[in-house]
Each structure stands twice: as C-alpha cells, then as structure tokens.
Length: 186
Image (cartoon, rainbow, N blue to C red):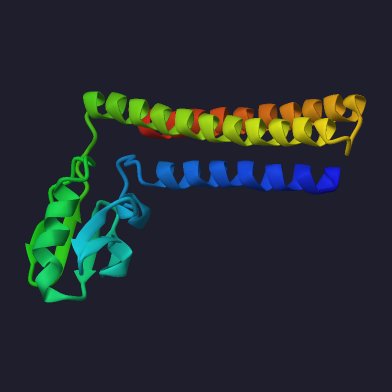
C-alpha cells in the first residue's frame, strides 16, 4: 500500500470517528427540539431492535415539541416505552398513532449530567482515533519488518500518523467544548 494511500485511509477512518461523535452529540438535548434527539432510540420490533426512523417518521412542529408518527399501530406502545427508557429525560404522550414528545426546560442538574454524557462520548471518539493510530503504526512496523520500507521511512510516516492523530484529538476537543457551551447556555 503506497504511503499516501495509507495516510488517506487513516484520515478517512478518523473522520468516521469524528462523524460518529457529531451524531452522538446530535442526540444530546440542549433545550430545543431536534429530530436527531431521538436517533439513538431503538424499538424492539419484528424480532429485533430497529432504529426509530425505521418504524416511524419524526418531525418537529414546534420549537419544544417532537412528534413521532408510528406507521404500525401495534408498535405505538413499544415506541412510547423506548422513548421513556432512553435516558433522555423525556415523557412522551400517545394520541392514536402519534406520539408527542414535549421537550421540558433543562434544570442545572440535568445540564451538568448532559455535559458528563458529552464528555463520555468525546472520550469514546478519542479512543477510536487512537485505535486508528495504533493500527496505522502497527502496519508501518510490519512493512518495515518485511523490508517494504526503510526504518527512516517508517519513523517519518509514524510521525505523520501522530500529527494526524493530534489534529483529530484537537477537533474532538473543539466539538466537545462547543457542545458543552450549547448545553450550559441558559
């Protein structure tokens, strides 16, 4: 594998970790209704656990209300229960096949709790980025051992991988800082 291809692959994988973090952050409540808030919710249905968006349509008709239009009448109770049990602090109300999810104001204690959850998500993203770095460095060591590249090349490329890792860790920290600011904003 050419060196630039290796670095592009590692960058792509690190971007994936950062994108996963952004999706996780999208599910954290900041006091405003957002359809992405319910993305992590899974529904036990049809012999497995399905994402909410595969059994219902989610919309935001008002700034502090999410509505979930469940397609299969038999899944309404399961959707209601999954939203209640999601740990998001939401209390849905069912009206026929529509589940209304009012977004309550965040109190100070809940805001602090959400910042801790955001910090856990960020740590998982940092670990994912470091795992990509580890895989890249191991590959470089194998290539050097097999005689594909020289020791100097291996060292130089390992430094580039480390610089890439540092860049993505910094981007994770920036995303966390921005999300904390968003959560704590009153």
